[in-house]
Each structure stands twice: as structure tokens, then as C-alpha cells.
Length: 172
Image (cartoon, rainbow, N blue to C red; front, side, top):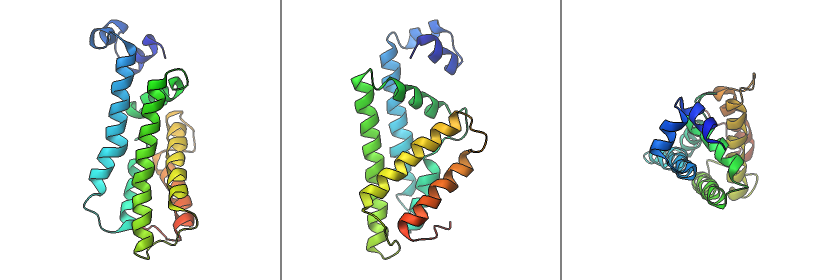
């Protein structure tokens, strides 16, 4: 990732970015932390008071997608993902975010199965991993401006898989 690209995405000059972040790696670490906050901690808070596993699952799916192609948090996470192979810290942070999201979904699936609301077609961890992978893939498509995949379409595609995996209509 190059400084000029980050500055362009942020609508700033390279100098302005360097003023706040003398090292680009510090900016990317902060971006990863913002991603962790948005895609894990905020979702956990959002579903904390919900008791219906269906409502929790639908809310979690919808909250895990970009708001649109210009979503700055997701665009920056995509950039960090591209740098993860070259930078061990980025890779570790992305892995931690992925693992926490999987655990979040797994808890929802386990609860839904225990209550008899979900009839899971695979192990909860497998379904949870697939849900996060679908979020990531469709999120990338949204930010890449795929003409047929926006946030609503992506949510429906993910819920289509979730319906099959949970044996539940997921209407909310």
C-alpha cells in the first residue's frame, strides 16, 4: 500500500497523512482496530439485547456488509488484506478479526440449535466460517462496484446460504 493511495482514499494530501501518521504502518494498524470495532464489537453490542436467534442472525449478517462502494472502513480493510501477505502484523490482526467474527456467529448458531429454532446442516463452526467468508467476499464485490451486488443483494445472498445451513426461513 502506498502513501499516495491512502491519502487519495482519505481525501487528504500525503503531507496531511504523514502529519498524523509518520509511519504508514501505524495508520494501517489503527484502521485494523477500527475494523475490529465496527465488524465485531459494534455487532456484539447491537445484538446483545436480542433474544431471538433468528433476529440475531439476520441483524449480524446485515451489519457485516459495507454500506456501499465508498464505505471507507471496508475499503481500508480490503487494502490491509492485500498487504497482509507482506506484513505479519496485518495478517495477525485480520486473522484475529476473522476468528472473533466466527465465534460471534457460532454462538448465535449454537443458541439457535439448542433452542430448536435452527436445524443445522453442518457443524456450527463450519457454518460460521462460511458466513464470515461470504461477508468478506460480497463486501469486496460491493466496494469493487460489481453492478449486480449492492448491500441489499449481498445480504440476501448470504441469508440464502444461512437459510439452507440453519433450516430456518430467517424472516425479520
